[in-house]
Image (cartoon, rainbow, N blue to C red; front, side, top):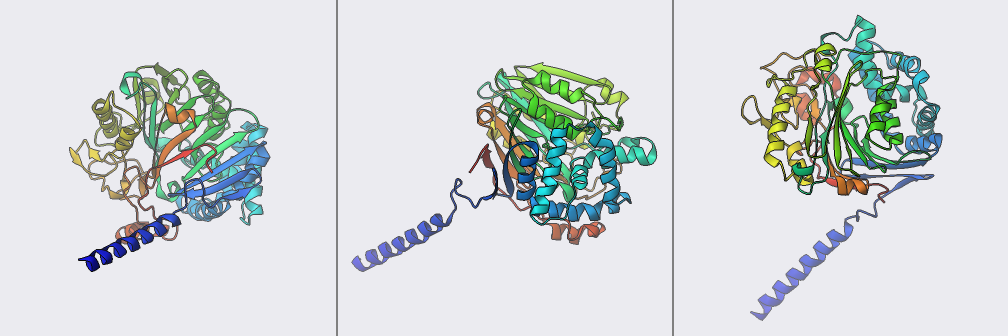
Length: 476
């Protein structure tokens, strides 16, 4: 018995040594491998790229371009190939269009930041021009709004695609009476697979910004942000939008300026409406953690609408509530059609808000974003009609959508983000890369099963299951 006990004790001691060694090999959250350049730095965590930049416009842009150079190189390779495949025109055509359309509308501060990004990336060995960085910042506006109008004379057939699921809640709707804000990004995977930056900007003037972003972007684009003015925000793009005014200020510039220089919600609205091009028309969900007030701000081209409350919620599902925007500036919004991704998510998000009302917090927000219930078929069924969207699994047999979506297209949710007032006070949010539910995506398996997308071979990346991770401003 003594021998058996001694043997068991030695076995347990060995296991403790093995486990302890394994634990010791795990890099603590505050001691990662960090890449630095000047005042900027970067680290990678659970699929995300955390980047901190600060200083004057060109200075912070250079830091960003240098630190994010490997991803910018990959992105440029991808869009130089895919732009002519999808449009018939080379990236250089859209780069020149970006210079002509955007540069006269953009403040010198942001022109300098764009040039800094390009120069920083070139310093790190990436072949990229500032014109390409500008086009990349305005890529969705150029491809989805300007190009159809330029080519065909109008944004016909509602080709401006809707993206994303979101909500914001406050007062009696939440567990502690403070704001909860959550969002997931829907995008074609060839582009959305790059939307994995957590960007912390400490500018020389204006407010500090903490947001999800895209390598080389001035703004969030996925539009999940918070600032040291106490503002939080997200949005869902208005689908089927047809109104666009080229030669006015692009959306990426207006929202970056609004984030950086807004002291309150009214400032944000005013900056977004000024010289508005209509590009990436959105239903904005905004909050002020100082007052607990939340806002739904729907912005089309000629029409806008603001609703406010300190007790309740707003949801985002890619279709506008404002009747002028919906009827006069859109077509095929899918507003009440539960066969449609927009109409189905309008119903499901409302159901989930009712289910969790009074208990909404960050954890329930994660569950809401991961939801796979299909209200059209009344069952769990990950597809284009669910809050965590999966076009790649959807045969679309129930609804003929515009040409931006066909059966089994590699498109859908690529992330999830959730935060509350307490986290926002510390410029912090929880984020999951890959999909809100954690469902993995294998590019090789998808392309083997759907050979109609074989042109994406080598340009489509895997997104394995990743955990929810909390990030905070000036993380080290």
